[in-house]
Amino acid sequence: MNDKKVLLDYGNGGKKSYDMISKIILPAFDNEYLNKLDDFALFNLDSKRVSFSTDSYVIDPIFFPGGDIGELAVNGTVNDISMSGATPLFISAAFMIEEGFLFKDLKTIVNSMAKASKKANVKIVTGDTKIVSKGSVDKIFINTSGVGVVEEGINISGNNVKVGDKIILSGTMADHGIAILLKRENLNFTSTIVTDSAPLNGMIKNIISSKADVHCFRDPTRGGVGTTLNEIALQSNVGMEIYEDKLPIKEEVKGACELLGFDPLYIANEGKLLVFVAPEDADKALSVIKKNKFGKDASIIGTVTDSKKVYLKTLIGGRRIIDMMSGTQLPRIC
Image (cartoon, rainbow, N blue to C red):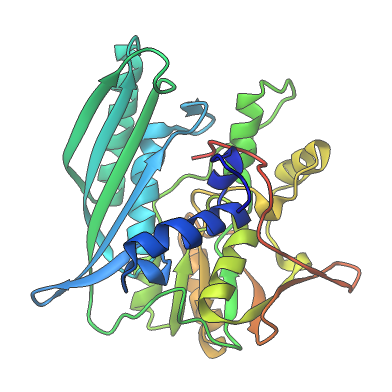
């Protein structure tokens, strides 16, 4: 970290984000819960195992194809709690609103949150509202935190991945990021690309109920699939080999990425799930995922190795290293 100031790069979920967290935030707060670097914290309260997570949403634009900042905030926190194998129960909602923001837009966002929470079977039970002067925030920012309960016998974390595990991606990559980009830049070509924002707790509950030997769940949001795979490789001290011909992507999204010069492996997703599962249970887990409406395009995309690096096996039979994202592709994507 040679920069004297925080740049947008430090918020992209890639190398600089990891550096800032590992060199500034972790040393200051140093504890066994945070140091695991999962998207949640697991701890015991009396006889219950509780999963806790928090996230802030600063997306631009706040309304986009297929959703808005409110729905995204609820789904994002529901999913982060669910990545621990927990059943999400309650969430909070804190609003930072710019002076002059339209009440009709606030009502739309709040109603979206209400619908999303009902769909995910969680309750918004507490929160906070702050109004700040013009220019102090951009329209509206939302923070959501959530808690859920983890049943006995479930031990899912980015630290648990094993050599030989199969890697499943629950659906097509880069839908959310490209939908946001096209809206943000007002690109004038016909597109049916919409956000993939969705609650994944139902899918995860079904996978757990199948008794498949799952070691890790992770939603590949900022930094996309490529960066997320690298984060987990570092957590578990393993490598991975991913197969290009198995990576699911919509033709429209692929075309937009090629036109705009983006690698879909590094574009954010908001309704997709990476599953690391013992090889003998991979087909079982895949079958369960495909039965869910958010998992019909799921695919086994790779295998965990002992190489300590993430490789992509290309369509022409070569191999290239997939590293953490470097630089900022799409700031304020969530």
